[in-house]
Length: 377
Image (cartoon, rainbow, N blue to C red):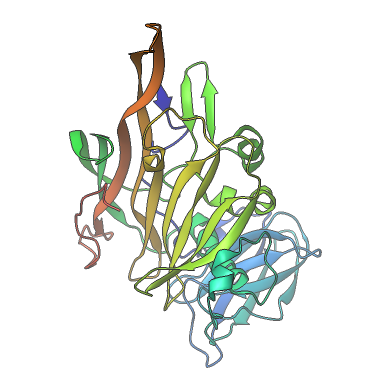
């Protein structure tokens, strides 16, 4: 039996502009709020506002809303710094110090750079080398920094505008190796949700025990979520390579495990739009596996990210594919029967957004949100 741990129980909105009034927070909260503006005074939406402690460790974060407003709540009273990061733009060099006291709210206007990120040339040598924890200035480091911004934005919840989504959830059975649909069950429903479409296991557990784990009830296939990809454990166990597509419209980061041996691991690519450096797609598969005979490269998954007109983000389409396994009998030359396990098909589960609705139930005009084959790559 194959199953996916804690995966696709629901389809959730990813990343929205986070702004809440201080009065909506608990009375004992220590809060920093305000507005982010660019160097010419214009409000900046969907900027990341990070709250750093005295050691420079991030404690929490928020996304600005359409007016550039933000609210962050500190875990405890103390001295902190506010840092602004913006996808596709240079980060603020000087964090702003704030003293947060119990039950008080501090208001600040933060200024962020309007200078776009200069992407270094993706040389042939750079695209051959797989680097762990790349140094600043390298093309792979620049791209990974933008990927991290996108992943972190996708973790943040709290919408400035209430949306609902008409989603199509599906389970399909595909043949191998051509991935032709053999059976398809689907349902369409309107949902109100935000977050990630799946939640993986802790990174330390996945690095130690593997992304494919055999249990008493079946085989579990874990997907790499944002928490895993942003973790220190992932940074230590995986190396990164900058890539670009043939058409030159996308750049990205390819990741694979450093060690050749070990428990099952993931390998894949995080794709960015070349112009905006916004996160567009995560494609992944498995390596170091003990999967049965068959097209193991077809086992894996994909997420596609989409930005709404107000700057909030959704996962507009996603799927995960696991193998259907059966035992086959064969006879050796001497007549002794041999039983082998082979992949006889693929089970694919996922969802796609068919329509985004505002609070009045009116469709949000998005040309990109058209119904497509949910299993297409």
